[in-house]
Image 1 (tube, rainbow, N blue to C red):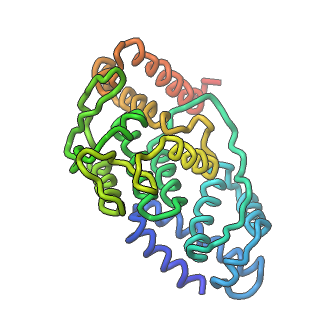
Image 2: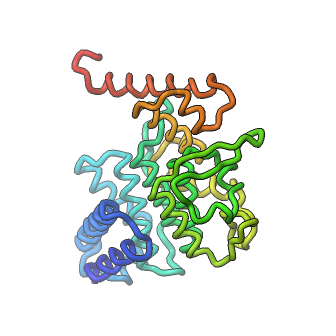
Length: 297
C-alpha cells in the first residue's frame, strides 16, 4: 500500500540518503499528495504495481492539478524532482521513471544560488546518481565548492592527504598559489561519508575524488550531473559548479566580509577580480528593494 511505501521511503531518506528533516518532510508531503491524487485519478488503491506503471500523462495530470491550486513553476519543478526520486525508489534498480520536461522557470538577471538552492542542487545530484557512493561523492564535492569557495579544478586536485578534513584546508590554486580555507563541519562530514562509501582505496598520493572506475574524476562528469539537476529543479542555466563558488563569495560579502579577506579566501591574485562581487551584491540588494519597498515601482 502507498502508506507502507512512503514510510519505507522516509526511512531510506533518513538512514541511507541522510537527508535533513526539512527535506524529508517536503519529499514525504509530495509523495502523500501524489498518491492521494492517484487514488482518484486512477481509481482504487495505490500500490507498487500502479506506481511502476505510470506514464508521463499521469505526472502531467498531477502537476496540472497542483498548478490549479496556485503552485508556481519553481515549486512544481521541485515536486516533479521529488516524485522522480520516489518512483525510482519504488521501482528499484530497474525502475523506468516516466520522462517529461519540467515546468519552465522565468529567467531573470543572473543571481547567486541561495543556500537552500545549493543544498537542493547537491541533494538532487545525489538522488540521481547511478550508485550510492557516487551520489555521496558528488554531494560532498558540491558542498566543498559552495562551502569553501573552491574552483572545481582545485577540488579535483585534492588528494587523500587532505583526509581527515579539519577546520581548515590548504588549497593549491592558479599559478600554484596556495591558500588556507575554512571547512564547515557539514562539509567535512559529507566528505568523510563519501570516503567511507567509496569502493576504491584512497591513498595519500591518489586523488580524493575518484571516478566510477577508480581513476581521477573528470570535471565534465560533474557538470553533466549539475545540468540535469538544475533542469529538474527549475534553476537558471547559469547554475553551474563554478556558480557555487560565486555564491560563496557573494553571501560572505553580504554577511560583512571585507574585500581583502574575500580575496584571500578565493585565491584571487588581484583585488580587482574580487571587486566584481560588490556589483553582484548590489544588484541582489536592489532586486530585494524593488520587490519589497512600497515606493520602489
